[in-house]
Image (cartoon, rainbow, N blue to C red; front, side, top):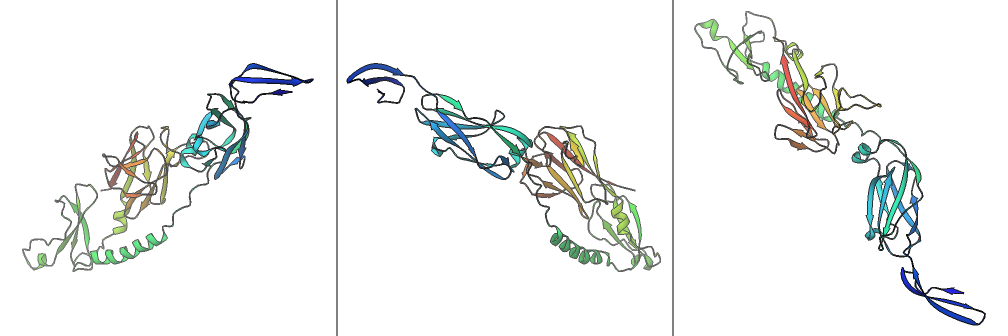
Length: 334
């Protein structure tokens, strides 16, 4: 019979009993690494996944567990979460999806005990699934509200004394209020001029209202002559993106084998679905995505939270991450 009263590493008394005799001797017990097994709630990594360890043998208390996918650390759990060292992984998290591409991986738990002894579990094969795309926002209430405002505002703007008008352009100071021309006779006294401010343009649209001229103001034509472009200024070499009235939504992000955004970039700090541009009747709107590298507006780089919307005007600056800079350009046909 062999008895070792202490299981910890170091000197110990070894007692050997047999045939009516008993002998005791000094021995040294070596430091032994812990033996563990990896436990996973589901080998298909999608949504929330729980992982933990089961301790099969330990000589000293386990102090730390590190979970690795193909050798890449994804989580470190300390003794406060022992003895199972449970960790809940959100596979759909944007940061995880950016660092771990969909596919098959080997998941391993690496442990370290109070004696500095380390060991690893037997690898388990898991399948990482791509996160589902976020639901499209419902803009219908907003569009209905905007339509009501337009129905109220446009008739009010064009109700200026005469029902007919001719349109001409001439250089003027930027004055957004209707002004009456100086009068020299009765005919001039019946004329009224409306100034329409155009985005960052040196000319003001002057609409002269004269009962002898019958050509109506063509506001649709004026809108169709406005062209918006998104230009990459720094951080990438992508071509400019021209926003067309026939399309409403444009994706901006890093190109991949699965999809190519409307404005495809190559910079590694840009996410695959980093931001979107929506072309509305009043102009383009920037919508920030969920990238961990952030979306910023203006030369001062004001951070936008995921889902934030920012109306864009001519010469506005915005950023995808701190590296790729864009400028908004508005051109108006003469």
